[in-house]
Length: 340
Image (cartoon, rainbow, N blue to C red; front, side, top):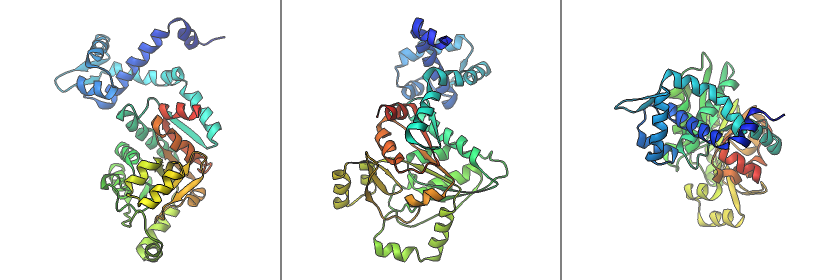
């Protein structure tokens, strides 16, 4: 027998669309509150005129309140939003998507947040929140967490809070980062994570990519050797997945290697490795820090990436990813992954 949701989809499809739209508005108000109508409209990607009528309805239902600072959820609105979370996942088929991706990718777990971070920056924040919740479940009494750089990892850092109990946590950069945008360097992100979680961190001030001679020289330095030891003994790895060409350009890759990445049709990047759609390694940057082979010895590997534009990059990397990987992604990337 069809479920009530299947019946509603067939007889009242507009009702489900309206419910999803109003849920999304409530969800975003809860995330951004207090928030003005213009900022909310931009975040949702809809016009203020359309938003105004929906906001008026939600006010009449006593689900939101508004003042000169902006809109916020009422206690009734918060309760309704919590009740709707699992319902909306079922309506969108997210639980089914997760199971299909676990089977397709052959990894430990997949966690999907609603929406597409290509369309809304708020979804990237949701990826951050989901990553933090996942990480909390994996913590032991003593933990070393190695973290890569990138804007997605920066979103994870912003979501961390000092409610990790009496766990002992040390954040370490998974690799060097001098030469990248300081805001998205692993050193910076580790410092923010440690500050927000009231934990400790170590810095790793070495270049992101080096020549063979410099590499051999650096790893003999006692402080570098010590941090490398911490990285490789991490219990949790938290990393992003990049699109190949943007990552190569961000690294200011020389013209010869950039041509190698392009001619090899690389689509994804992680840990300095560039992958084509088949998952073959097209190019490897000599980096000081975590290497792809090291992941097989680390119990918990969390990969975080979202947006349908990153689906090829995610799929390419997942063909090399260890089976212990937990992928945290969004609905946009997940649906595109299954199409591929």
